[in-house]
Image: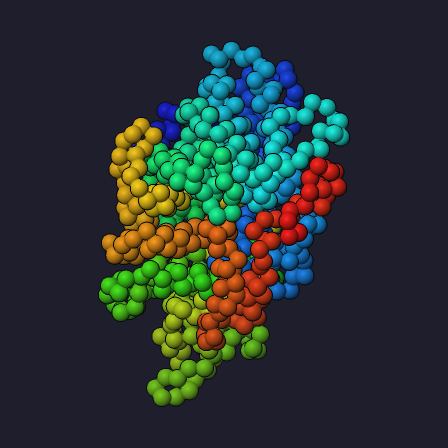
Length: 631
């Protein structure tokens, strides 16, 4: 699809509509050609698509990096207890685990493509009058991506080879590069991005699959916060305070731009990703890995498994897919009891209670339910009931008019929302597919308890419900669902954290006072979630620090950020071990198999898991590398 014109886009923004997330990235990424190839804008776009291509691979944001490597934290666990694989999300991986090597390889392939593209474009001579944006804009995107890939490597592996030049020959000696210390790689990343951030101010596209100036500014804030963390060695010429100041200033640049806002509807942010739509009004989703097909044909290919591996479990033997309410999903990731407590108990005010009548998900006198919990940990999946009654449904007992009765919850798998339940107590009020066996049977006879099975619920952030996905398919393992790399909510929380940790007077890069306070930034995120915030929660630096850390967990759960937050805060191992013992004892709250399995995973975590091991295959070819300590 051709780049959208600014005029057309502006018209659509006035209408307040959502746009299909189609960009030049819809084309198949090209192998990066050599010098002399880049003679027109079409070729510039083809080559740049090849640099972006790593992001949308299964090894990075399609599965391995986002889910197996980065999504195993104190708020999320892999729930397939039948798996015998060595997996990063079970913390039983080794240097020989294939997922780790494939991710490492794909990141360096992205760097290689960037190096070759930069070299070829710098050597090219193109009439600037024939370009819609400058050649420098294309180079800036490639240089940004090269730096971002290096950041992911340094964040996950620590000391890694810094590769900033394209290999000039197939000489085996070209791969013999020792690791550069992590702190030097990170410093190179911020220096590189800061040198090109102004070149990204030319508007090229309003979809979140392509890097913009505010994206670069937000990622700079993220890298500086990681650099200021507990696990990164001192950096010459920069104190921790300097790095917090830089993080605050770059995050503020995004805020000051006025280009991004929180969407009033938390769930709509992710519905847009499920539908591959972009919201040009709020632009909360700033940067996404885009997945452009579902593999239903050779020209409709993708490498994303978002919604399939993480989502609401939905499996059926019924091949009449037009009847499915949710497309096929393994639902391999659950939210932990720790996450449930963050939503339901932690940082809540005594006044934050529901005052309305007993309808919907809230009940009088109880804490208002955080809207993010309703979306991320819904009270249902699509498993259906079967197995203990001749009809294939679940037999339940209830009492009405003083008499014991029996009924059946009869549901065809994947055709109805199936509420989590225990001992005839149900996590959601609306239960579909009810059938009577004897006597009177009414929905009001069932006990509604929104806390039921709270420690084992599927991560629902990217569910494949057909009302959202707008398609019905067979057991399709690949989806068109996009994955967020940077959201404006994250920028607000990074800003608040950096200012709080700096703990001093701050101005922007032009010497002007900030027009947004820490309290305002955090409250903006919490207000969207429908929960109250008090000035007492900002009484001192320690209180603010804990509130922001918890808020990041609530807001950004399942977005491949929490693990690295815990690492940079220096609490990763402790928090994972705490999650292992934070298991509810009341059967109403758990499935013993799942929660015991989660506890085992958390107990596996040790200090060596702060970094990934250098892949065995890489050590076999690059003899200048040595294995990470503890591995």
